[in-house]
Length: 188
Ligand SMILES: O=P(O)(O)OC[C@H]1O[C@H](OP(=O)(O)OP(=O)(O)O)[C@H](O)[C@@H]1O
Image (tube, rainbow, N blue to C red):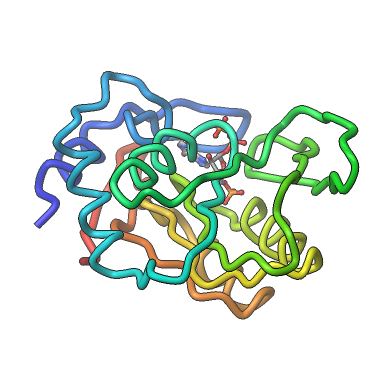
């Protein structure tokens, strides 16, 4: 299963962002082009693995969670909300400080209410900084974070998310960078 995803991840160029080895892939960057069949296959697996019947909202993180949430929303008719990198100043907006292996910035959460039963979907969990910050903030808002999905796990971020939030992130592939090359295992 997911042979196309494996091939695509293994073919990812690796660039440097400071000291950080950053792989470039359609799922994580939209480069090169995303093949619709791969996207469909990912959505089918998420639908199979996650109980979506009581989910009010799919929550994704700008930018590279948006195509995943869109595809899942179209397949399930569940609406989605984007955690943005832009401040709106709307009533109830909360901010989250996001730190990845190569960037630091604020993210802004709007329109997620205390009664909402949600899933979070993102492209990759690497240091875990993004998911630790966003899951904690979503819980503080009173939302029930039923499941969290990241298509690719890189390094040890998934364990950090578990340790710091108690949430087990569903991941479909594990990618490590060894001698500047991606090494990939499919997990489902
Ligand atoms: O586990 P972490 O180390 O936190 O890394 C994961 C995050 O890094 C990327 O986001 P980025 O802020 O680069 O934005 P993008 O989605 O716009 O590429 C990615 O989309 C994840 O949200």
